[in-house]
Length: 308
Image (cartoon, rainbow, N blue to C red; front, side, top):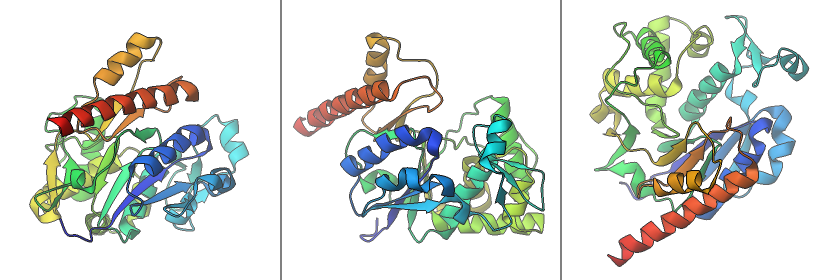
């Protein structure tokens, strides 16, 4: 690894996830080296709410600044009226764009414009639970890329794989050799810039307009397939890793201490963070309790390794 590698964390959030995002920011300031910048993107209407989370290492930006000016958000009162959880956008090149699709476009845009060497996507419902080291992002001079060679078998994942193939000019298949979705994903901004150029070459139009017209895709799959199958991982400067850096809780609940203990005991030494899905009906107090107990387990694991 070069001595001056610049690493950036990127988180997209919104007012509905403010409290869980605050927990993430506290954990970043506690466990992530101060010279790793944390860019936090929220809707412009939410900037005042999140303002207290900005500091010398955390830069708060408006999500709208990651989109072209022809990508127009629908007024929030109307979004609430149709009972959508996230924003809705209008463009002159597509049907109305769901917030989920817009968020993925924003992530690609943020990566493509980043001046960092490595960008780490950190979902706002993560929390770091042990000291985070740059070394965990590199292996033999290449940047880790989460890649599980076993297909999930889920119809949604097959749809995302097919979309990646169409957008990148590859055969129409439900699996391109790897699953790339993870709570904590590492990208190279130079590869992200190549990705948007490839989308434009294949589609013949602006990449944002192309993705706005794509009803189902996953940004992590799109990037992973591009790096893996178009560039080749060696040429992309990536090395595949099957182990996640985050310990996730995607479903279920912490209904009692036994459930929390089982989650805590499943922490592995490579887990720098853990995630409790934001849509789970867990109070912020319970989330904080679980994160602290996981942090305690991480401390015991690290102490045992240092004593060995």
